[in-house]
Image (cartoon, rainbow, N blue to C red; front, top):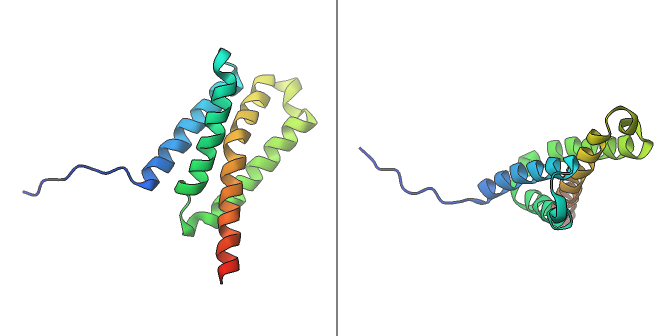
Length: 121
């Protein structure tokens, strides 16, 4: 019977955990449950977005991520800017702002990587 060795933390695992933790923190930021740590957590969510963009998106997933990430960012931003959610659910608008803090840097990093790959060809 073969023993399984210790699992090492890979870049994909770090990226996956960064995404999950970033999403939870983004929702907590949106719900206003962060109190005096709001500024710090905002930076943490932003930095986790960078980590997600660097580590979590494989070469074969770039197109899907950019499409879905761009749609999510644009629709969320427009919904918040136009005020669609302010009248219906102001908490939802705040949650979307938190999610934007995570997805905007991730989408920018993935887009820059894709452009760099295209430029190298």
